[in-house]
Image (spheres, rainbow, N blue to C red):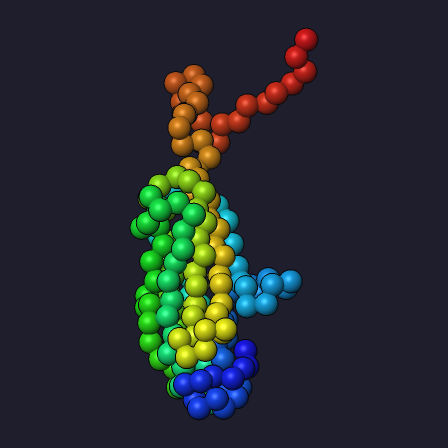
Length: 158
């Protein structure tokens, strides 16, 4: 993003914050997404790394925070850092850690703000479904022997 920044004496700033490691949403400038898909319940955590880069000619202070759809799911996503500064053309990894300790559909918006230029703000929409593994709630025993991959075939019902 470029624009006039009062902190730099009204001088134009060229560049700004850039993100790598997430998918740009084509019709929404400065919006990205991370689709984690289905994750196994109680498998631990899912880790994802995003690179934050300063493409401007000046030092940028940044702030990162999460906005969740359901406030009760406060601990399902954690960030490795929430504030910092980047020198010109510098980059820093941001590690996102997602918990799979609860079965649910999770959504969050991660906001990345350029503190020096409020018009340079990025939004990352994150989606994850935590599901149980197939056939973990029942087992099939035939002739006294457990069946490793049971399936039920539905035929024609008269």
